[in-house]
Length: 389
Image (cartoon, rainbow, N blue to C red; front, top):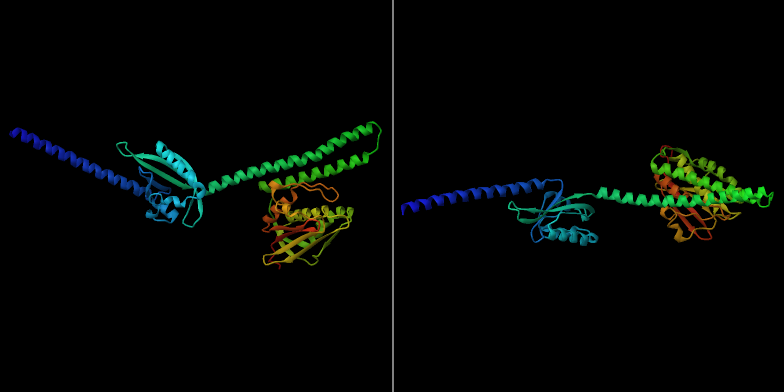
């Protein structure tokens, strides 16, 4: 009897020892979990954790600092209030589908920060398990990828713009070169036959088509330099009336051919601070367009007024005008197209786009007012040269 009692006592001691070890292990596990979460508190990623019921029971300090909300507010599914409405269904479906399969997931969605701004978040969630391999739920880490996302979207937009740009170039180059090739062949045939009728007409068409192709290539080179960053920006102290006179003299021949008068109301020196080559290109395009779309005997007026922010220059004509529908598309590359002038003059469709780009590079803006059948006025602003004014 005594022996059995001794055995029982020994067994009780062993169990107590085992229990003590288990308690110590449990304490160590608890402490490890607390340390685990403590490490996560200051982790640069936004950390979350969810339970078996798919509801979240933990968010680290980085998450709460980002959202500006408390743990109680985010608890459960409270965090979902910050998800952008357009992304919520996708976000929920991705999470639930992965959870049910106990598979990792990676998704991107917009979430509101403490300033009320929606930021793009990349969320990587994965299942986590206890030491005995029991499934406990999910844990996830999120990063703000807004800048990368914006760059991706910008790249997509730039690629679309580039595709449209080359489509315009291909179309616009094809037309004049078809004319040059086609009428050159006619010209050769007529000369071989000693038939000189219409030779002058053919030669004139070839000449005009060549000029148009050259204009397109010139604009293409300017645009490419500008977009690739190879065009230097050199602002300087400019005498605007002198620059307008210089550009007007270059285009005077075109105006004389159509009996169009060009008037400039800028007589005294008006100092501006801008890139001379760029502003010269802008003036040349706007005045050339005014001549092109004004009928014979019309007028083109150039004037300027001081504003709070600088100087606003205008180029007006009494030509064919522009419909309201087309005005909204004039400065968009994706909508660019050319309209024949009053003497069927052809353009490249790129002039106004280049103007917009150059004016914005000089810290200015460009706009237009027009009525079909009455005329158009293009306005662009430039900063005044405050060192002289």
